[in-house]
Amino acid sequence: MARTEPFDKYLDEYEKWFKEHHDVYESEVEAVRHFIPFKKRGVEIGIGTGRFAIPFNIKEGVEPSAAMRAYSIRLGLTVYDGVAEKLPLEDKSYDFALMLTTICFVDDAGKAFREVRRILKPGGSFIIGLVDKNSPLGKIYEQMKSQNRFYCFATFYYI
Image (cartoon, rainbow, N blue to C red; front, side, top):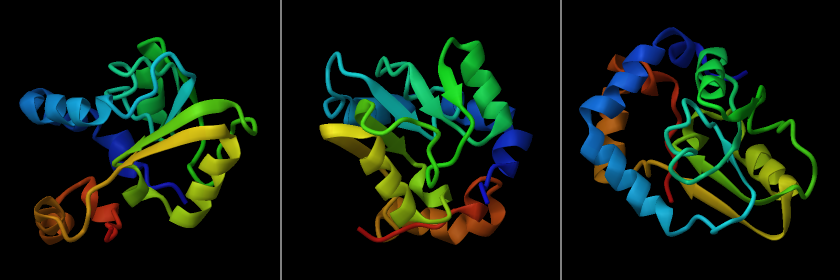
């Protein structure tokens, strides 16, 4: 079952974080930018409000949150209703797939990874960004989970 309730209910609060922490957001964009294949067809899984798709020129995404999906569509993105474990995308149709801070919200990471493999063309790239449970940030998020509208539903992993 997709963990979309906080994203549907508190979309404005989600977006406000990016505005208040613009430097953090920009550093995340720059950290990922050099992994994005140039002039290739990509999809973002967990596209949210398009915060990462847009600067990387990704035109398509999958998003289970109705509010976030509608937001991204208003920005001109093509967004499919679906979850990472059952992507509504054709086999071998993308050069790369991007998943940023999404894996902690999926129910079955292994299934999600198999789906990514299915939709990638031979030689395609899977770019994933996550909060490592053992990292300083992961430890902070783990401690504050019960007080955070978004991360209370998250499962952080060790890498």
